[in-house]
Image 1 (cartoon, rainbow, N blue to C red):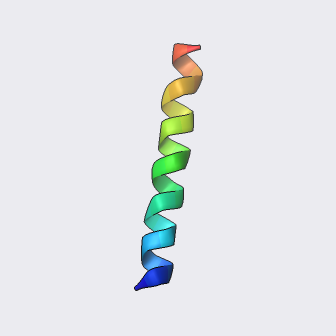
Image 2 (image 1 turned 180 degrees about the vertical axis):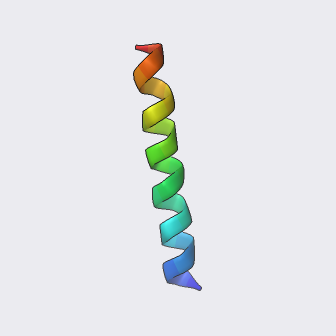
Amino acid sequence: MKKNLMFILHLKILMMKLNMEPLM
């Protein structure tokens, strides 16, 4: 369960980075 949560968190951070890149 913990590993799954970390994976989701990592994906969320990656998505945020991808979303911020085009804005910049």
